[in-house]
Length: 213
Image (cartoon, rainbow, N blue to C red):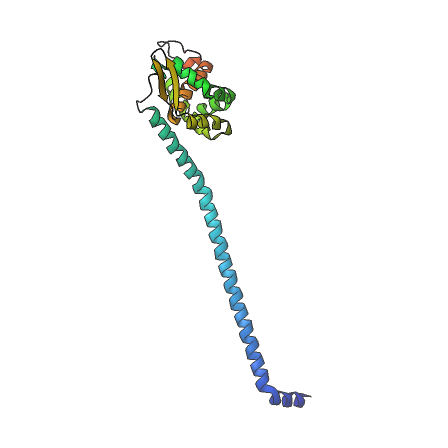
């Protein structure tokens, strides 16, 4: 039997060697490709995990930075010294004039704050309030942060459609310019008063009692 196998091998050894060679190359190539595939799959998966970790760490920081910048912009706008004297009066502390209160009511600012008062008050608390001035500084920032609320759209639409508010006086019609910053400040004074009504201990004794709107 061995002789028969030897004769068979001698007769077909070229084919056998070629077949074995091809099989070896195919197997070796398959192993190499498979090894590379798993290697790159692992690297891609690791890169995805690393990107996910970076995203998880950076996105909250970017959001926080964006919020801080927005708050800073609002704060600086409230300190630009351009408050309309027809709307605000420097009465220790700053209060709304009758016209300011009228606009607050007409644009829906008063009803918005009243409807969302609990949330707005809670957001002011996040500023670690120590004084009445802290409340005054925080109030327009909180209002600005809530301006993305759907209920605020009617206020923004009013400003868009009526950038000037007409006031009829004995001397004729007077137009008061309304912009987003002005409205935020008007609402800020009202919100400040609401907060201080709930925290009378923050009111210094040497200034007049707050005027309730």
